[in-house]
Image (cartoon, rainbow over all chains, first blue to last red):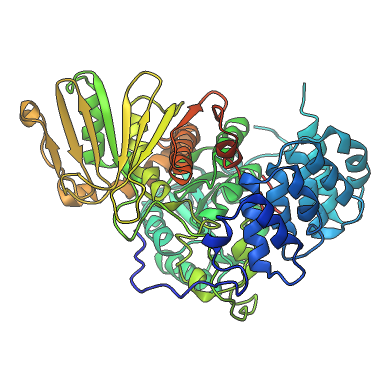
Amino acid sequence: MFAQQNPPPQPMTDEKYGTAQVIMALPPAKLVEILKDPGGSPYAKAKACQRLAVTGGPEAVPALAALLADPQLSHYARTGLDQIPGPAADEALRAALRTLQGRLLAGVIHSVARRRDSAAIPALARLQHDTDPAVAKAAYAALAAIRPPL
Amino acid sequence: MALNNPSRRSLLRAPMIIPASALGLNGQTAPSNRVTLGGLGIGGRGARVLTSFLAQSDVQFLAICDVRNERRETVKSMADQKYGNRDCAMYSDQEELWARKDIDAVLIATGDRWHTLLSILTARAGKDIYCEKPCSMTIAESRALADTMQRLGRVYQAGTQRRNGANFIHAYELARSGKLGKLRTVHAEAGPGNRWPPATTHAWLPGQPEPSKQVTDWDRWLGPAPWRPCHPSYVQGRWRGYFDFHGGGILEWGSHTLDLCQWVAGADATAPVEYEPKGMGADTPYSIRCRYADGVELMLRDSGFLGLGSCHIRYEGESGWVETADGGRIAVSDNLRSEVRDTPKEQAAEATTNHVRDFVDCVKSRRLPRANALAACQTHIACHAAYIAFQLGRTLRFDPATDTFRNDEQANRMRSRTMRDPWSL
């Protein structure tokens, strides 16, 4: 197997919110506060998103959706949104289809596909002709996923 | 054979004038009977598997793709030294390797975060796959892996070589032949000791400057895993133990030991229906009691075995038991002493070579290898389900027909992870 003989380097601690372990023990409302904190670090926000994927409800959707355009945190925001049941997360992802571009847009398309959001079909039908090959490919795959063969 | 899209091997079967050596007349394997191989992300363990592939006279390794320059060079050197030429191609983008029509199969030995995605994309590129374990990061990935291999008809072998290890086969045959009586409990060593605890951490290491893409492409190294600041420690092999890159000690070892228990329990197409974690303290032994639908119990634990070596398994029936581990030693109940003998160490060490041979034979015959995609899928689903129960600290009930936990929304949310853009399954 793969020996790990020396002690690993010390992990990061967020000055305001503490370690990953501390952050991820917080209730959803506190995690949403971290996401809304203009001074919150990417580290604290990333951990909050990951925890909200397990514990978050519709009340976390606006704060998560606000991070979809952040290059470092967009994927973390999708990590949270992908797992939150209900129409609020679907609507937030669908709205982002109109505002994002490039790689981040491709990511949101993957999330829409994963949630099998049939209300997104018109937008995806348009995006499958996008000039960005990654976006077009993602939209095409999403349409296939949402409308599986009979 | 489709005339408008002939495969390399079918084309090579067609009549043509070629040198005697190429026909296999000088102790060489004819090209039509050779399996051509490429590699994706070959490091320490991958190099050991590659050595077993290079030892096969009917395998030819043609190309390596890796995000790390030094690893590309190391693997090329291994292949070129073996063949006495400079022909092994090097790529940093897997698309270039997949575009090679002359490559039949691919050895995948990247970090775990890439395993399922690369396996599926490699299958879509029309190639067979030998992939190191753990083969998936989630229950959802496990299912997608098996579904894809079945749909595309690719040969897939998980790197769970103990299924082809002599002593493990001997223990399997003892149990399956009925000599233990009706099977009651199977035991798998998983997450042993301080080095391989079940738990993973969500921590990040402090960021350091990213190396040039020529040295290590950090974005590609991360692949579908969440972004985090670069730190050389991860790249140098210390990514295990981090949740974003690793499934923890249960999956690390259970992909071998729980896999052997699934095999002996006749459960290659299903998984346990109940997972009950115990001993959750950091300094106390943990165990997870799992139960199959037919009542057979599966115990995942990190202690209490006989000390025969690493990767213990133990099978208990109504009239006897057998226990074995790496190294070849086999212990049995008194009534079975005449039935067994230890496997010599050298023979026990040949599991990887046997496993590679099994894969190569199946690439040619199109049969299912011993650690095929469905068997690997179900083993990994059981490991992930056990780790989810461990993380939540409560008993979970699972429906193997739908891959869902019964009445536990949090557990169900933990069955999948979102891949970082632009990646998806």
